[in-house]
Image (tube, rainbow over the protein chains, first blue to last red):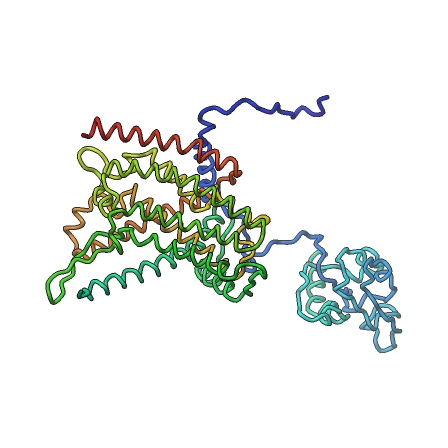
Length: 175
Length: 356
């Protein structure tokens, strides 16, 4: 029963003389290999050249801030619930009257830790967050000799002031 | 009996230079192998250890020295240590008969002396090469036996049977060359291939014995355990082999000796078939430069031919898949020996009826 149209009958005829002495075949192979010497190389010399990542590449976590510099995260715990590796832990705190420029809503995360040794970079936390507060950026995870290095605190992941300014500029340009 | 001290010094210096040069060339053959393999496979070879990766052989040697030496418990200790030493000893021994260049004269206080660039000019040169290569086989067999490991033994037996199958064809094709040149001494053979064109035909032996050259080349591949005949080595790469129980520098010695063998076999090939240190228009060059410089030029020409052959060996290795053991033996006994016999008969007939 023929399944596709692409089948080819196997050629089992006995070898011709020029096939049996192998030398014409060897010379053909040598010509192919010689041709490959002059083609372009497929190697990328890291770290001088780097491959560009796809736009949806899932790298290190970043805690977002809005245009005025206020933290978006409200310590709701949905990311910790969604994480399949149980890598996120947090402690909430109430916003005091003098801190309105720092946090957006009345509840904020006082301690927010992600254990990078457990994290599998799946992006579930990014999908679960209702406030668009955590997303995975393009940075590759660095390596270290000590295990204590890998528990990232909130300050390691929060956007810095320069990044907030860059975001504001980008939004203003798009408007 | 008074020893000619100048001759002694000459020979010692020559031996030292040859040994150091062959080890250096073998070390950089490993670098060249990786680079050639890389450019044929659309990638860049080692380029981090020094410019263009030129210090890579030093890094490899250093790594092998620092590894731990493991000697298996129930093996015969002194045979185990002897095998790589024997292998590398016979590899270096075959470089003694190759004429690296023509004699040159230097003027000393007593008058002029001729210095020959060949360590030992024995008149059974080719036979000596043949014998030493056969003794080199002992290194592989001892390595397999002394490892106290049935798989190593099997692999070394296979390597030995491959080597003896191809030694016969090697000898037979050499007989044809000896019939043509009438002498077994390598110096005479090189002298007969003087220049490039004489009496209406090429002087190099490859044009007089093309079939013999192809047979000799194939047998050299098999003697060097080099792809596509590298079944003994591949067993080391894949599961086991005679190299299995060796660690650090002993294994390094085995692998290194293989590259030295490749260098010396390329030199023998170029001396026997490609004219050794002869090149076209050498007489005009000999009259234009002093004799020391001319010898140097001839040595460089021989080196260029040797490097060409080494690159050809590497080229073929990275093109062809390896043969099965029964294919290897069938090719050796049923293919090459009848061909070599036919070659010998034809050469004998031509020498007797045409050239006499």
